[in-house]
Length: 142
Image (cartoon, rainbow, N blue to C red; front, top):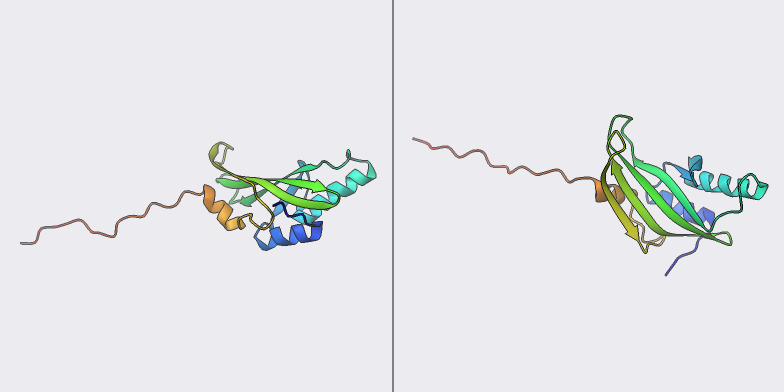
């Protein structure tokens, strides 16, 4: 079942789950989650942008270590109906320093409640470190 929330509740739940970085709504309006969506909706009301779309795309980084390092990006598809928001799909994408895809995880049939925490989402695309056996080489004793 799709959970509909007002903007404050929607942003609060996602922020508590670790999505507290900067986002873009519809490819513009950079800011914290609530601020980005609010600015987009305000510009729609002022007529600077077209009418608010029912499907909003929120993009942001979940892990950033610098320009020349791999990064993890998050794309969220949010439904917007009559002032209420719901989340139904999310892509978590790991790219190298040049933007080449390293790993991608698509999460569907989500709700604001079932969306994974940000650290869990990052873990979906990060390779687990290979564990080395704790054995030393066998030696013959005389």
